[in-house]
Amino acid sequence: MGLVLDRGGKDDKSFNASAFTGATRAKNELNIHLKVLECSSDSAFVPTIRTFAQHGYDLIIGIGFVQKSAIEAVAKQFPRISFLLIDAPSSLPNVRSVIFQEHEGSYLVGTIAALSSKTKTVGFIGGMDIPLIRRFELGYRTGATAISTQVKTFTHYVGASSEAWRDPSRAKELAMLQFSKGVDVVFCAAGSSCLGVFDAAEEKKKYAIGVDSNQNWVKPGTILTSMVKGVDQAVYESISLKLNGLFSGGTVHMGLKENAISFSIDENNRKILTPEIERQALKIREQILSGTLIVPDFYNLHKSTSTSK
Image (cartoon, rainbow, N blue to C red; front, side, top):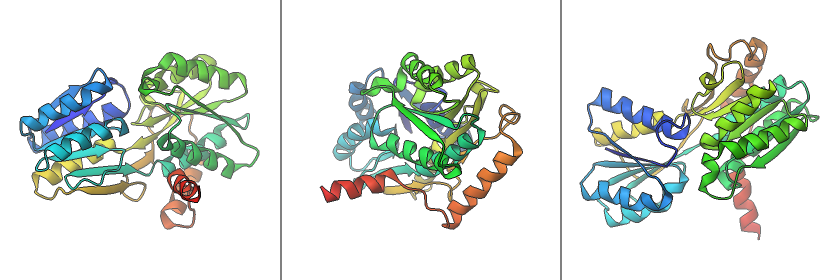
């Protein structure tokens, strides 16, 4: 099995780290051969993925939408090899695409942010202004205003290129700007750039919300919770399917129902995320699962807008 990571690498404390955790678990528990390669630039994706394919790897795993074009380009050249693509759709028969229901988890942490905010002013910092991150932002903002229509949300994006996921200095600047406007809880969906947001929150004694993996441990007492995507789960399950001859192409959606989306509670945030707030968030979670609460999905709104133009 071959795992391809971007420049953030396996130690980004976020998306790549979660994928690496899932792949490593598969290596240890399922006795697979695993090779992990980190690409120093986006232009390295295609040759790296192609190298795995040329060496006959059974499954090649690409993490993040930035690898979509590279995965598809190589998958077309090697139709007998299986590919896993996280966070981007693909219609190729040998590509399994896993799409997470980020809007569900973002809605939940939006309610937690609003319930925890003393100023009724919360913030969102995304990596790039793209549909995937808009999906986070809409869910978060909707969850916050569901608690109180008086809650205000400030939104900023780190940048317009893939460097936006690796620019903690710029993310810290944006967090400081938001804190100066009264924000006291900020949700960051910007890869390793979020480390800058966490630093700002710690300095200003505000709260931050982590993303993708459980980041509570990065700044105990500062990170209110994390919106966890089961990237590790998706990677592990896909490897298991491949080993058992059950792997197939197509798009798989993973959300609350599949226990692939959650908000994290542990010893690092137990003192700041109160039992009452947890109770309310879990109640809302059940409403989403039962279908009595429908979380708006930017992807659906985006399709409607595109269709109407």
